[in-house]
Image (cartoon, rainbow, N blue to C red; front, side, top):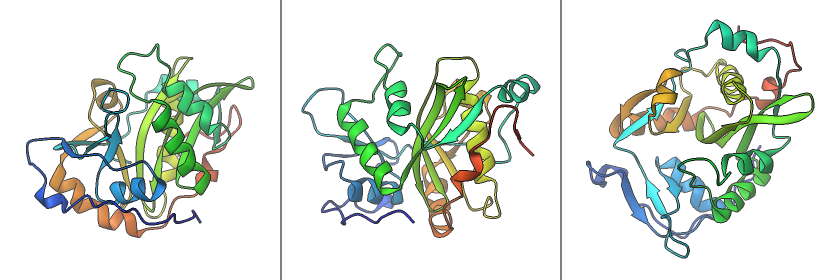
Length: 235
């Protein structure tokens, strides 16, 4: 079981009172583990403001991106490609975050403060990486926060074609257990790339209605994602 950190000293208010037209709902606070968990439990997530030393921004999107576990689009070519990768969980969390934070990537937002904060959450058992490996080399993956049945995806990267998609496929397989109907795979905002994989938008109100049931179910068995090259891919 993950270790519950000290409670946060910050209050994020009642989500029902957030501006219905603005994704940005709070500014400030800190990135201590207790603060991050309290935010996710209320439907918020942090992002840097973009200026060093400025307070943190906290978002609860008016239109939230989620991936229905029965709606992931897996092409035949991806399923074939997945057999060429080894999938591991939580063996290179810091490296996955570093890959996602690569400054050469467009629209990069993960800074040192964010990376350190999620590494602390990982050490406590709340943040996880799903990794795609080929011939002993990390070639893609994703990371996010798991609280009960909520998996809040933060970012993904790849240096070989399909590697991040293979990690996502493995994550969806893990979440598709006996509690799948209550689980929520949150991807923050819908992008064309995520839409091509089956992500959809739901309203903030709808997302907040899903959260209590998701948070109440047990966390998934992430160990189920581990597989060698050529191993099981999908049902």
